[in-house]
Image 1 (tube, helix red, strand yellow):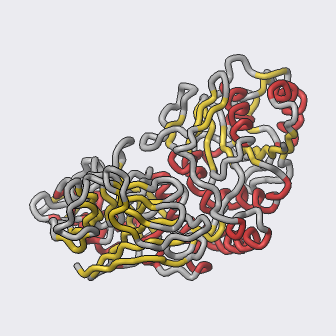
Image 2 (cartoon, one colour):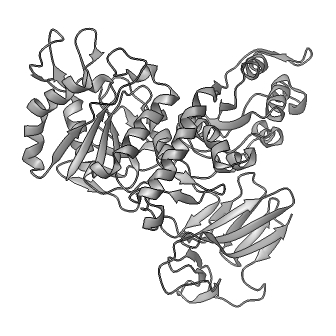
Image 3 (cartoon, helix red, strand yellow):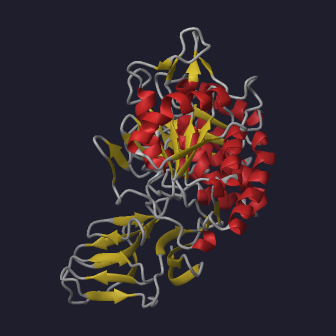
Amino acid sequence: MKIMIINTGGTISCVGNPLAPMTSSAFAEACRVQLEPLLAQRFPDLVLDYATDLAFPESANGMLDSTNLQPSDWCLIADYILNHYDEADGWVVLHGTDTMDFTGMALPLLLSRFSADGTPLAALSKPVILTGSQVPLFYSPGGGRIEGMHFNTDAFQNVCGAVAAARSGLSEVCLFFDSLLLRGSRITKTDANQFRGFSTPNAAPLGRYGISFTLDSGEILPPPVSRQISLDDENVRADVLRQLSHIRSRIGAVRVAQLNAFPAHYDQREGSALLADLINACVAQGVSGLVLESYGAGNFPSGNANSAKDGAIYKALDAASKAGVVIMDNTQVLHGWVDYNAYAAGAWLPAIGALNPVDMTPMASLAKLTVLLAAREGNGWSMDDVKHLMQIPLAGEMAAISQLDSRINPVLLAGQAIKTFNGSAELFNDPQKGPLLRQNGGRILWSMLAPDAQAELPGRLVVQNDGNLVFYSRNNQPLWASNTGQAESAASSLRLTASAGDVKLSLYDYALQRESWAHRALI
């Protein structure tokens, strides 16, 4: 099995005092002498290759401390993987820890392609494993000749785990760090001094490396539904490369900024606020998107404690939205998600066009929005398409609150619901009545079972891999079915979407790339 090592820089490949990145060729030679004999003890069939021809133009020696990484550098990494896709069974990308959480979201998007509704058109079929370290891998007292590997370094353990993960056949971008395999699009750096530098606060680890390497199959994203959308197909890969070429030509002009909520001065009588001034300054600089880091469940100061719409901050965000700026309302809290129905202090944000990222991290929001805006024109997406894509999971980066998927989260149990992102409607599996499509406020728009049905409830709603949507009783008897099943496997997703005047529940067949069943209701 052949694994390709891509060294971008960062602590793991630094030497000297102060620490500075080694060149890619010097790092590759040190790995061959110091590292490979140790890896061969565990993986005797392992073949390592090194990307020594990837260089970042900002740096004199071609390697880059991730502190100075910019969006165009995400494209360089993705381009290298795509152009060498047939040459390896997996990749290990060595990366600095400062901006690892941004790259963890950007790479899976740059290595895939989606339709305007979020259906995968091209999907990763091999592992791409990010890793780094808090302590350098190699020991070089004078910054010259490598004399060995560092004492008590996390770098060696992280490389071992990343190589094991890259051999696993996963089809997603992950991070291996301090014995844990984490989804790349979910990571956040949570410690600058301990070896466990990263976590995924709203998602479970995908795997662990203790005495042996283990994976949790229930947490791992499914592979491509067929070769027709897999990067193993050279035509599919060519389409992604064309998309990447367009993104590279645009990404430098896409400006997305983060702005966190803090107790800043505002004056209700004068209609002024420091946060409003900062928002207006961002808009004046030509930002395309704003990622708000709000309090708690998505609460952001409006500038007026009595009437949100009269506040200076409300008016600044409203003006930004009307000017075409995409506004993401993330929470700055590590655990939990945005809920506009929780507090009046956050309920006003949808009115100015703020989007709900659920439990996506602010770093993932920034990277995702940057890539999607850069890809928009080349893919023929409207701004509404971009806003829709920002509110659905494309790489496992957020909870799928508006859909079920037969491959990873196929069941809606009694008491559970899927909801539209604007909170206007939900499909609720009522323990006594079965699945109900209902408007915010409780008005029932559609009932899956007849109101007078005598059924053994509660039951469960299942999106099956045969293309059928079925509601089963507590004794496993089918009480309702979409009757869209196929003889062959037919991976599908159940989606709940809302527009200005209606809500739609639809079953989408991935292989046929079309809806196989739908119900629409006016609201």
